[in-house]
Every structure is written in structure tokens, then in C-alpha cells.
Length: 160
Image (cartoon, rainbow, N blue to C red):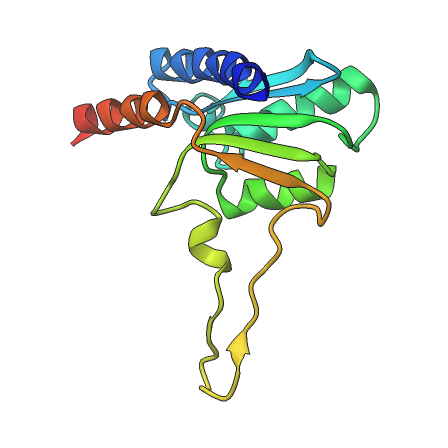
């Protein structure tokens, strides 16, 4: 049952990603759901708005907080087509979104690229990983991953 619900809302996020694609933006889309209702949605608009922070997740968070009239999204689920970047992961944490669901991994810019332990520059001790989301948040990845990945691959194929 949860898999079906996740797939339904990820399809909505894919609709947002296609809107970004139609605007010649990197095709990433996001939807935020609370109590079974969409309370925020967004797609990349960095080129349109000439704003490097205008990522799908950031715009969806802004829309959701305006919908509910508050800055915390406790109890809400974020559906996003691609693994959030570190900036968006920080905003997701600050907004206290309870559940994060994403489709495709992002091996170049996704938050997980930056959070795993690595040796300190001086070599004396390891740098601990950063907890990217709220400590009580849960993560589900790989929902409609192939469809989400294909959209990104096709977009970048036309750019190179």
C-alpha cells in the first residue's frame, strides 16, 4: 500500500520535473504531502529566476510553508525525483520534514556524496558524517528510479 502511495506522489513530482524540462531547466520536481494532500510543489527554476537556490525542493518547501502558514513541516513527506543536494538537505532538515522520498541517486551533487566519514586533513582523526535531515526523519529512495534517471539522462544528453 505505501509503495502505491509513494509511486502516485512521485508521478506528481515527475510532472513537476517535466514542467522544468519544458522550461529548459534541469528536470527535477518535488511535491510535499501532509495528511494525504499536496501542500507544496515545485520544479527547478534556477535559469528562469536567475537564482542558484531556486531548486525544486526549496520552492516546494516555500509553497508548503505558505500553505500551512508556518515554517515547520513536521508530519509531511517530501517526494523529489532526484537525491537532494546538500543545500536542499539542509533546508529539509530545518523545515523538519518527517519523511523524504526520492527517485534517482545523484552521484555528483547529491547530499550523500558529502556526508560519509573521511579522514581529516591532518590525518589525526576522522571527520564525522553530517546528519543531513532531522534526526527523526525517515528516508526512502529508489521510487520510480528508472523513470527519474531517464529524464535526467535524456536532458543532459541534449546539452552535451
